Picture 1 (tube, rainbow, N blue to C red):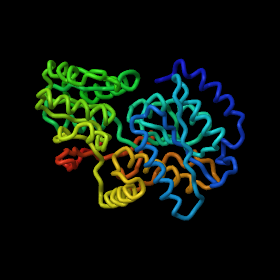
Picture 2 (cartoon, rainbow, N blue to C red):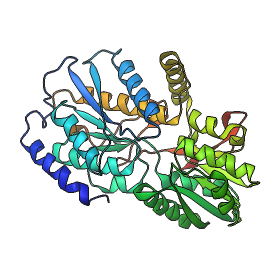
Picture 3 (cartoon, rainbow, N blue to C red):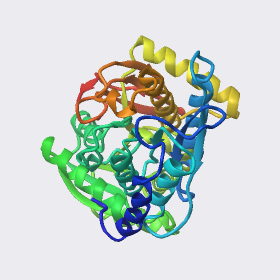
Length: 370
């Protein structure tokens, strides 16, 4: 669970946290504006712009409502494993953050949860790894569907006998492979191979030919959107006529730009939007386009919901310790769907399959309860 070399460095910082004033009971260091939430954004994060802009807009929209105003503190730096934990601790010590938002990366999420566990600062996680909810931090909420849930929906809704999964290298890939295997077992599907893909790979054609030799009926592109788009194009160019599928984060301009016309037919799992959530999505996407001059995507919607949800919780709890707000029992309409959570902090989500057609994603089947 990511608890090895970097833990030593993080533990040193946590000793500092234990004696730092203002970290318990919700009493943050005086600042103007009066409250702060922190977003960890490693420089190497492929979807950094969506994460940053979604969270920024969420804070700006929340600040239009009555109540204390909030500021978004963004930290992240390149370094050895463990640097993310140090940056999370600095958000707590130096910035006085009252809540934290993780990136999509599992290792960074676990390091942030170590900080949260010692400081009782609530965390909203954007990481889909199943292991995130196994850390035992009771004031954590995961705002994205789990990998297992998305894969279950894809395996159930796509008729294919032989699957191949393309996953990232390193820890992220091992977590994804474990969750995808669990979903395949649940669905009685044959996930025959998981291939690790380094984002810096240069020969997409060779990799596509390697995949075709396995003769899969369907390929799971469990990668960041830009890398997945490159491989979707390479696979179609190499003659792959089967199904391409992946997580909801592929509903992205990064994927569309890399895949071009070859995004046609891509199938992803996405939350079902009831009328209130559909309205929330429309208002968010219009505001995002006006604010940043580009289209919103699934990741920016999740980041937007994370910052708004965190501010909602902190405003509700007032002067009481933030951890007293958990477990969460309310439900809000978010841009990414209804925001409701189970006792472990996992999002309760109803998923449906969406298919790309002429650059747009439209539903292709009935919702799948997870």
